[in-house]
Image (cartoon, rainbow, N blue to C red; front, side, top):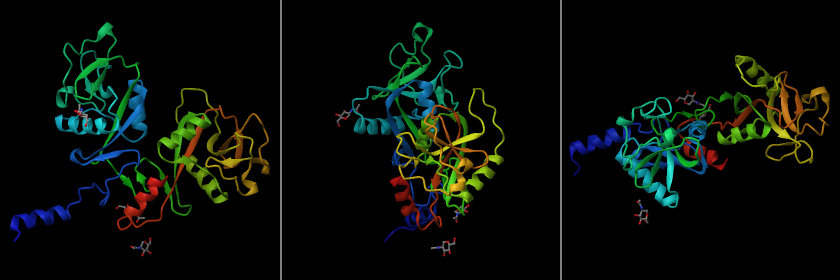
Length: 326
Ligand SMILES: *[C@@H]1O[C@H](CO)[C@@H](O)[C@H](O)[C@H]1NC(C)=O
Ligand SMILES: *[C@@H]1O[C@H](CO)[C@@H](O)[C@H](O)[C@H]1NC(C)=O
Ligand SMILES: *[C@@H]1O[C@H](CO)[C@@H](O)[C@H](O)[C@H]1NC(C)=O
């Protein structure tokens, strides 16, 4: 017979929500792997970057440049690393003394004394006065290194910090849900050229918005009016947002996914298909009309995610599959 305390433990265990709002689901993004023992998600980036780029790329994915909180995490991640990328000699970790020489801090502002650290012999040495970022190898020893060198890196997201946007069916990343259209949108106000904008949406596991009809265009116009005019330091093309269509292959205007653009005629600026061979990328004027723009032009852009009609709890598994299929 089960003892009373064991029963009590089981009851508490079953009734507790250990998933921080994601009922029964420990899922962040399809490109991240969950490690149960440390309740966090990880992704190894096997294209080498500078330390600052690595930090930014993790943030763009809604995560953080990995450093080990403690020995347990160091070992759990090393085992994942050894299993998936055994030949990767070292990675940049989220520790730096760029702000004040000799005072190493984590990317989220903790002192190095609060987290795992084990330096190689005679390290850190700030060699040639130019080593402010930290490498770690598979066995967990650390070395200070040039921040502008390139190294592979690992991004991390704790389960605890994960918020799930049930309407948009994605980790919360400030997408705005529109129930009538059944989509979620995010306005990006860091100007980028069309290809980089396309990539930025991909990084968020979404796509450049495809404007299908008048209702959607009108909504996006309203949405653009709600955001404060951001302060932008560089030159960029004002008055348009890059959206998800193009004619880059001279095959006719198509969506970023490769289907033919099939929109109401009056959605096009001046009621006609753009015909400028120097402008093969798709944009939307602030008034909601579609127009072609030069692919090199930097402007704001809009990403979208198809929302999945859902009742939150009962269908999370289905949703997860859907998200993973993207
Ligand atoms: C990595 O995995 C190999 C094969 O399983 C094992 O022999 C080796 O000791 C592991 N290395 C580390 C540092 O854990
Ligand atoms: C889901 O929500 C809709 C309304 O949003 C409701 O009509 C339906 O009964 C709900 N289904 C379940 C299984 O709760
Ligand atoms: C899902 O649940 C969240 C909070 O649990 C709630 O804010 C949201 O409106 C719900 N969405 C739907 C479609 O029921």
